[in-house]
Image (cartoon, rainbow, N blue to C red):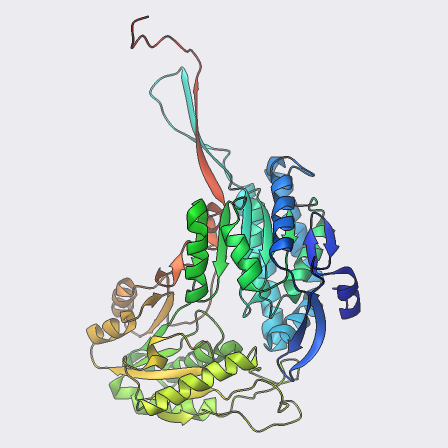
Length: 508
């Protein structure tokens, strides 16, 4: 990864195989959220830069340099595996960069890089093992009929700020495996590891023009990508409001759209899961992880604890005790368990939600304020204490809306039906979990939850082989798994008549 001076000198916009500055010459300072100081300067692209990037991707797809769509599958898979190896090589450097850019702990950054490498290997293996086509029996030995998959074309990939490299990999790896070219727009807040990934793709031998990146804001770069007539697919991960705008912009050109728009995820704990000391401790520990990993800035965060009434007080008291012990600080500091929020704007949003919840009757059990400054927690950093709000109900904004911060709300139930009703009472449907020692109940409740991923006696794990998507306003489309590859393909039916004959339907 180039240093700040080199980045500014060469530019962070990559178009047609060349690094460049923005056409306008505009730049943006990237801040370290732990102390609000700038540490890198990147190019601030706009619509002109976007048009140039799309043009380069279009040329590369339609027969320009490299002819990536015509590259044999085995060669495409080999390149993805080389990228995975490079990610492993640069794990420490990339993990540190992700920590400084997004505010997460260094250990979280390292785990992210491992997951990115896994994604590249998975899609390499998946595409390499596929059959060349599905034969369709036409009922005649003279007819050869086969269904084949082809790349969509030019893909616009718009990624969020909370998991910059991981979310980029979930889009880039399958897009390349399928033979597409792309333009990626990382969040203007956290673009650095995506820039580094483009560098690794170039190092791995990807032809010029296949991978393009435009660093810049969503209102110009993202909006132009979504509406551009030469873009065949737009894949967006982010908030509901922005996702709606992407869909609206894409509609006139009827391009393929994939949206992952977040969630308000229930973590349902039945009393029988806490019947033993070990079960109780595990459920509490997982509830903390579900809510406070990466300071709660996770689309699948278990931000709604829905706990059976008979164990509520014991469970919440232990949660509050342990939440108060979470060590906040700079993500690169030794022993820190939770880093800052990504920006001052995000912290202000979280503070507004907590204030509104308290006015609506929630009971504060821990957190609810900025922490005292310390050497590892500068006053200028965007820190906020892990916050537990008890006695919450569905009418509260903090329960209905995605906070995207270290805030856990508590609701209670008495019956299985009530638990399911509460868990499903949300506009979103991304993920959820159920904790119980009863195997039958686990299957029943999991089957009734209207969420794209349901964990039983666990929270947060994902598998590259599985699909990731949701119900309701959590979006449309799927990432990961075979469906993730299918998002970046078109289906073609090739029908060959080996012995054509006159039809004679009409006189003549």
